[in-house]
Amino acid sequence: MILKGDGQLQNEQDFSNLIYEYFFLRIRFGYYRCGDSLPPIDTLCREFNVAPLTVTAALRRLRSEGFISMHNGRPTMVLYQLKEREEEEFCLRFFSERWPAFMDLYASSELILVPLEIEGLRRMDDGDLAEISRLAKWGDADDLLHFFWFTLQKLDNPLALNLFWESTQFMGFPFAKKSRAYGSYSPGIVRRRLNKLIQYIKARDWNTVRELLLRYQRDDVRRMVEAFGKDIRSLTKEEMVPFTWRIYRERPQVRYDLAFRLLHEIYMGEYREKDFLPSYEKMAQKYQVSVSTIRRTVNTLCQTGAARAINGRGTQIFTAGQPCDAPDFESPAIRRSLAYFVQSFELLIYTCEGVTRSLLSSVSQADKDILAGELKNNLLTGRTEFSLWCYLLYVGKYSPLEGIRVIYRGIYSLFLWGYPLKASFGNSERADNALMHFTELMLSKLVKNDVDGCAVTVRELLSQMFPYARQYLLEHGIKEEEMRLTPCIHLQLTT
Image (tube, rainbow, N blue to C red):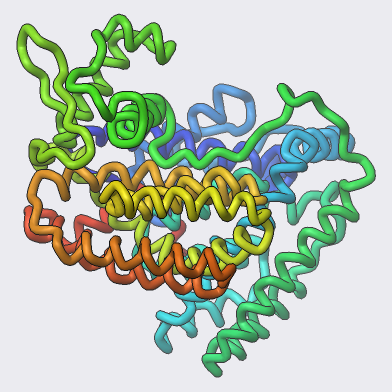
């Protein structure tokens, strides 16, 4: 989906890059071989849900690099001659660069993507089950990808789709599954898996569905280790490729990353006791970016309502507890970011229990005391409105899985968009009371070392807060459907 108005051209460029990456990996992994035809442009437009120019730009880039041929009226053909040794070398290098992050991300996906997939499956009707039954007849690697994609689309949450895309691209799934270097691949495996899942989905046996999803995923990891584990190269830290969650992607990601950092420092860090930001020049030097990047970032803060430009004085900031300006609801970028803010609640609601149990079961008592101390301080200072943020930051720092830390830090960043909305309109007594109760209850559970109680407490708070966040946006002109219209690649079923 591509938002209209401001940012449309950038979104199209970002999606073109995504489609380029998609086919680049497929060709280099041997999924497509010399002489194979790529799907027609109109098919790709339907499958990715983008405009013809977006697909064409990606294909032209592949052509310029010698991977494909494009001629009007003829199929787009793969030209790249991939030798078996070259395929093995590419696969080995790809996984060596990602191996520690690869294994970690698979474990992280058990706590993030599997609960989201189960929720999507819960929402399926008979027509949806007929669609995935059709996929099970063929059992191609693409059918497995479409199964997961189709399932997550039932959440109607572009942020979840974005995360799935980023993680599967990083892991080379399912492109490597047809690679000779990957090991044996049988469509029969996919058919058996999908048919087994469908059997228990129809029976609404969600515990067994979860067990099957985890078993299949762990089997894939085992096969990966068997295929590559003994040959994985030891690389330097600089050579390793970490997993990053590119929510905004490309050049805007730099600006938004800096905006998140500044918002955090305004509310929780070094600027929370100050009235004005430093000059553009001083900030550019401090954050090691250009003055123009600082100017655009500060303008974004002003549009959120967290700051205000005052001629002759600089940029005034509104710290925690202060009333601030209303967000600029006319800005498509702000509306998109607020939509992400609402979507992030759903990701937390379906993943927080497993993540919390995993975290609190693995950290030391001393580390648990750190979270308890922060919550207790919030009670003493009357800052319980930040207790949920403290929880997210705690997960982002102490989770034993780097993938969870990356994802929850990303969600925390998106939560920052919501504070000016609350601070500018007030009337948040119900939300404030819920956060006060959460702080007291969470602190009590931590003291008793009640891990399950902590997990349930987080889920209950998020379930209470989600309607408040959604209602804020509805009351100020952002319609329900617009909360779902953030840019995201789609993989539609076109066969």
